[in-house]
Image (tube, rainbow, N blue to C red):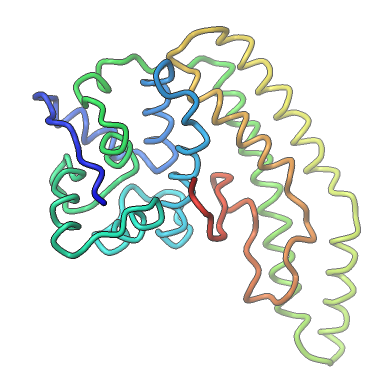
Length: 254
């Protein structure tokens, strides 16, 4: 059944559009920073919302919104099965910037029934240590990407029975068996950087959403295993997707 919505007080549409122009991750962090006091227990669900948006956008971490068809699939994934008429009605409530699409910020405003005016009034905190932690986590992602790209290349070459395929199979086995020293070092550095960011921020509520996100990214990266899913090259789907630590495989929202 439709969730319903709240009547929005007048708000700065230009400012709201600017936030909606952030990527999926940026929109979710903005919401968590703004309403950490009210919704910190919902952070795991917001993470699942983020992953579902990326999944429905074909793994595009830099996406900003979904079209009507994909928006309907997202609503269904979170328990709202709608008729065509209901979908049209609900999209009218969700689509606060009138672009006929739905971004995660619009969905979160809709789901949690918050005022956009209040959302925009809340400060967004960050500092130098947090920026350093973001860079450190990006280095972890870069190392993971390098392993995955090499693995995909070797998997493709390993098809067949000729000499090149045999050599690729051997190289792939070596890649999976070796200790990824550069990745290990990047993970250690990222863990230290996130710890410093947490200490620097203290109890400042304006950045707690981003701090939670950094910790979640760190946990996701720690679970990465180079062996991954090797059933077939076409079926391979890394746990850590390019540029953002989001699951590229289907997720079940809570």
